[in-house]
Length: 239
Image 1 (cartoon, one colour):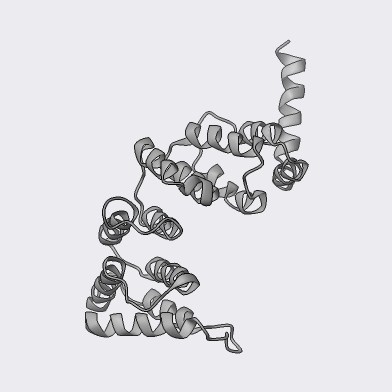
Image 2 (tube, rainbow, N blue to C red; image 1 turned 90 degrees about the horizontal axis):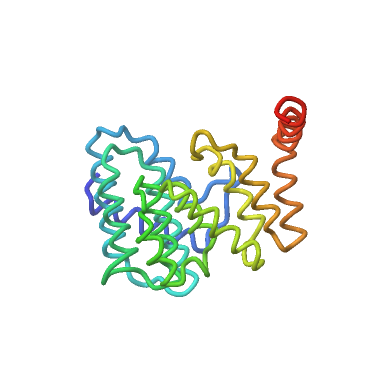
């Protein structure tokens, strides 16, 4: 397929997905196209052309998507990028980065999709990048995504201190936040017990619902029992 043909297929799937209902197998026009992209060999010409089509739609979005539909456009486009097996993530990263910062950045309520695309493509943001996004209001509108980007980018202390502040102010969707904690754990630094981090977050939460959610997260992973055993060991052997 040519770049133009891929672009037409992508736009068609995005448009039809706005009103389509899942079929009996649970698939949609967008999910079927995602499956098609995922099946491409990373070294094939088709994969290269599909990549170029996706990049062109990030750089020059198809017109006609407005309001909620525009959010669905960017959500769907990011999902298709995730489906494509490619060795050239740098092109996707650069395209999304240009939509996150600079004169071609997306408007505030859409910028989270550019952030998700940048992180998905493997880009690590530095503290200045994260501070700029904070100044632009993204931390306020999408705190879970901002925190996730900070962790994936290895700005771990910044993520913890910011999360503690949000929990104290009760400005964090605790259910959405809890869904990201396994990824936090996977990216945590050696020598620091992640159970201590979650305990600190729990203790800084103002909302009882947030405290309970973080406690349940630890309980389900036997982290609470491990911490209690460690405390007991210290009392017996180190005092």
